[in-house]
Image (tube, rainbow, N blue to C red; front, side):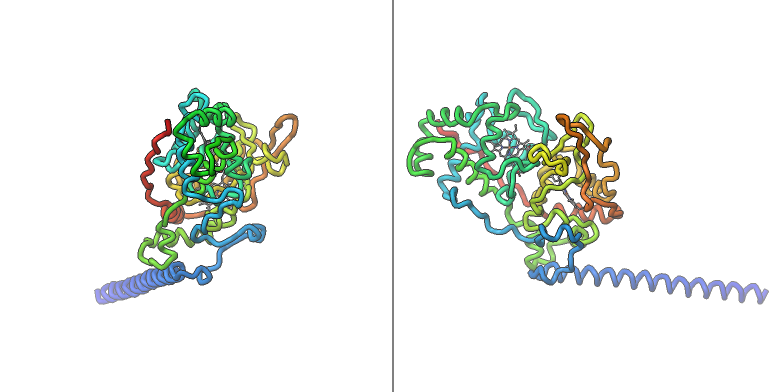
Length: 388
Ligand code: HEC
Ligand code: HEC
């Protein structure tokens, strides 16, 4: 009997000793995690990016890399400087459907300020409700894009604005016809005079005014901006970890860097759907260089929660899906390895930066929480009254 009792006593002591050790180590881990997060919070909200932990970058990404941070001041080109009157004229033109052939479709139909300056659709409806083949891009922060469109086929906003007017599926008109129509509208005379010195209407002036307006469409201060400026308390622990993962383990900054969250390069993340009906060769269609097949311009990520569905073809409906795609390193990036386009055999090579990251579900949620802090509250923009 005595023996049994002492065995029970020994077993009891051993269990409580083990239990103690275990809970000590759990507590130690919790303490360590808390102090790691506190340290990260202090560094990232110090107001000095040189104190931040070093990013994880590939050597090939370094030449195009600059640290994430605030958006710099907007630069206006010397041949189209800013003026309030010009931007106002541009805004009115942006909302004016008379630039289109049917007089039903304005730039703002697909770039709607209430829908993040895009249209929340996979593909936009244009002339005669025809569907386009690419997802409408937001014009928020477009002043920071060094080339325009998913494939970079326009070099400047001035050059870009006449393309949708001409596009058969979009506004199906012509900039010369549009300029002729605008010139006949009395109410525009004073607006052109104030913006350009006299009332002459030309396609060049229309493009310049629209471009000047688009450059003013810029994000306000996001929670990310507040946090890195020293408001340490505006980030939750998950958002903080998301920021850290974005810069380190998830390697997003190999492409999404600078205050615009894009290095303005063209990259292949394996979204070209080679050989399928939806195949889109992206940058290749502009340069005709085989190595550009399947490359798209790296989009900026500010306001990203407002610009879904995502990717050039709007193929991803949630941000979780986007991050899971990167986490897996997009293993099946195309159904086919090769395609023949206008007699040329092309293959689409995914960037070496897209690789297995093995993020946990928690890490995926943290990255998403961080991405959400890059968006600002939509401001109300009422369509201006159209001149008659
Ligand atoms: C029918 C819908 C539609 C209309 C109308 C439309 N757009 Fe777009 N816009 C798009 C789509 C779709 C894209 C992306 C196309 C691509 O990459 O090939 C785009 C891209 C852009 C971009 C490039 C943004 C970037 O980050 O590169 C700008 C700028 C732009 N549009 C301005 C305008 C202006 C100015 C007008 C009016 C003159 C206009 N759009 C009319 C659908 C439209
Ligand atoms: C190799 C360069 C590269 C890396 C690394 C990269 N991206 Fe991207 N990202 C792109 C390109 C290019 C696109 C556009 C592709 C397309 O439209 O088909 C894109 C698109 C996106 C979009 C959709 C944006 C929109 O407006 O539709 C999100 C969100 C995004 N990336 C987030 C991330 C996150 C988060 C990471 C890190 C886990 C990351 N990216 C890593 C190049 C990259």
